Image (cartoon, rainbow, N blue to C red; front, side, top):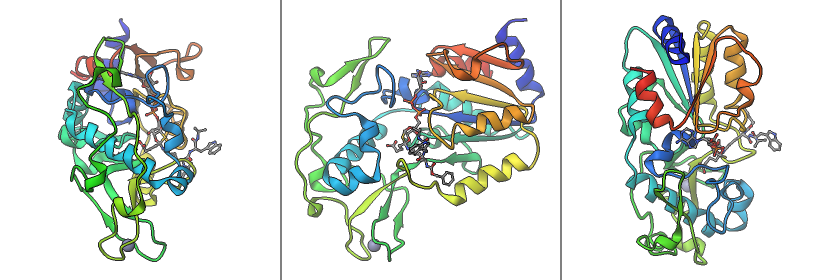
Amino acid sequence: MSQLQEFQDCLRNAKRIVALVGAGLSASSGLPTFRGSQGLWKNFNMIDLATPDAFYIDPGLVWQFYAWRRHQALKAQPNSGHYALAQLSKQTEKEFITITQNVDGLLTRAGHRKSGLHEIHGSLFELRCTSFTCTYIERNNYKDPLTKNLSDFGFDEDDLDTTMETLDGVDEPTFAAPQALLVDDLPKCPVCNTLMRPGVVWFGESLSLRTLDGIDGFLQAGPVDLIMVIGTSGTVYPANSYVDLVRRGGGAVAVFNTDIESEILRGDVANTWGFQGDAAEWLPKALD
Ligand code: BJW
Ligand code: ZN
């Protein structure tokens, strides 16, 4: 039996399924990943910008980066991988959740069932007040640009010099030269006029307890038969911990990644499959 047939057999019989999703799922929608050869923004390592320290030191730089990311995400379209997961989320005979590390909103736009979608690193379209005494949160804010001064991303979008070549030759956008912005140029809380921040989870920050509880609730309700690990390097905790958790409980693991040299697949592990290539191409085939 081929790997794909084995996987599809497992999927057919599986009652409880988890998809763990990372940036690779949105790569073919034109959104760059974080790590690896295509994971670097021009002049900036984006991992350095995804920290509370970076925001504290230069909120203008970090806000331009996230304004640019929001703009890219809004321009992007969900791909067939997003749609395949959205379809699975609507199958009533399966219990299925997606744990996505992506903040781009593309699974929601593909029609993924809301109750089974856990955005553990937050959303580009959520804004939070930075005042310790104010709890103001704005959800589903799709305004673009957010402020007058967050409209210029420092490059001409049509200028191909500001793009990188992806593996399949499609030009990928890069965040280029930011301008110096003051706090007054950035989004302010409508309640207390304090600086707002992107509603994403940066390194060293706690994840939303509500989101974690939702995931734990599913994991504790019964053994998971299958976890699909899609387009993630699996380097970030706690997202990566779910794979071992499912495996220890006897669940099967299927990895969809362009780079299949993953720890998860080391050794001859039973009920573990690796599908190398674009997740957007594999998922519709595999979940068919
Ligand atoms: C394709 C493809 C295609 C390409 N098809 N595949 C030591 C010091 C300090 C902290 C720590 C430490 N050790 C551990 C920690 C904890 C830390 C952590 O994990 N650090 C590690 C890096 C070591 N974690 C945290 O700080 C987390 N908080 C925390 O632990 O709090 C304590 C706590 C835990 C639990 C409960 C309560 C409290 C927070 C982590 C937040 C991560 N935030 C970011 C930014 C989000 C906002 C934004 O988007 O800007 O999340 S960082 C970044 O990495 C982003 C991503 O979601 C995340 C994961 O990246 P992902 O998605 O895997 O992308 P890549 O680029 O890494 O991989 C892409 C993959 O796709 C590759 O494998 C490609 O091959 C593949 N690919 N094209 C299929 N077409
Ligand atoms: Zn406020």
